[in-house]
Image 1 (tube, rainbow, N blue to C red):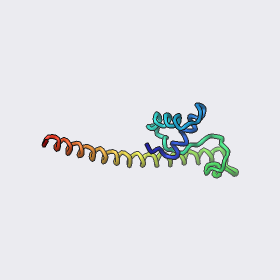
Image 2 (cartoon, one colour):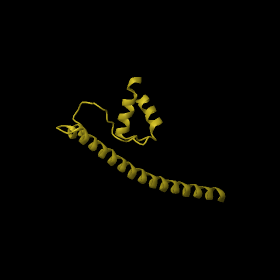
Image 3 (cartoon, helix red, strand yellow):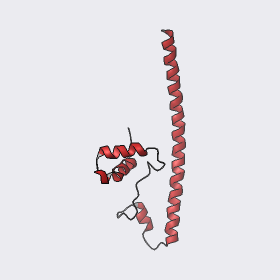
Image 4 (cartoon, helix red, strand yellow):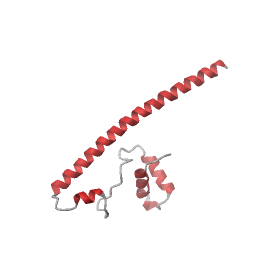
Length: 113
């Protein structure tokens, strides 16, 4: 199956009220695999911890500065996601062409029999 670490964490987090189990998380991940933010890191608003965002927000930043930083991070994540989606689309097309060639070769072999 091969889910990313971020997707796995989200699956566990999103199903914790149903009893944190691998089966529940796997079901959630299967249902949400096409979500645009599926492989994005899980960010919980108000979460305590030493995360990078918390470090950047520490200090005397105004509300406007914090909003600007958040908007820049969203913009960067969207740009990164667009690049990944384009690369995935190209790889998918390559795999599709390879599969089509294999199918045609198998059909030729079958006709020769």
